[in-house]
Image 1: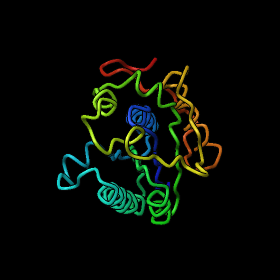
Image 2: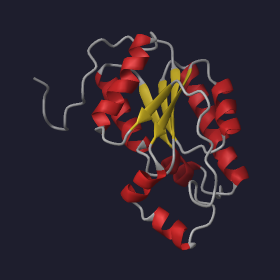
Image 3: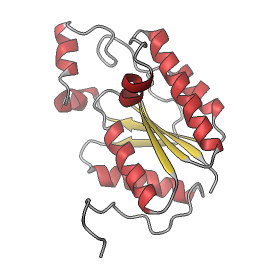
Image 4: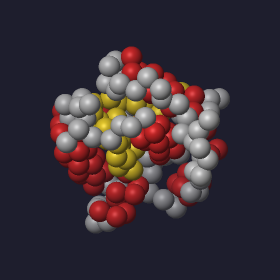
Length: 189
């Protein structure tokens, strides 16, 4: 199977990392060579010098897209989960890949604030956190994503099913037996 890049974008706490990890597990269980580049993880581990100003955010997206394109050239299905708030930076990432699937994790800001697992929205709304995407820094919604995944009122598995159905329908993956990943330590029946 040729590689591809599946890029999950959306507001903080939209569900990008959750959906990306589940997609990775489902593809891996189907025997597909897959890697996950999570924006938070890569920033902390590989690019700690980058801040959160617009230029640093764009540089982070550029670096992630270079890594993703390199993996793609080696036949790896590469999943990226990153806010990537700037449309132009995401379009540059698209241009680096041979096959690019943009997945907009479309969660209203009110729902993201309700979820707020790290307390970041609360800090930003109090004014304690500058340049926070969706509050004090802009997010450009994708103009033409391949998928718009609405998460409100849906389970993560339902959202991932939408992503996988698209990949199969478009002939990007050949995995007719994709199913939810088994919990660790339990065999599939």
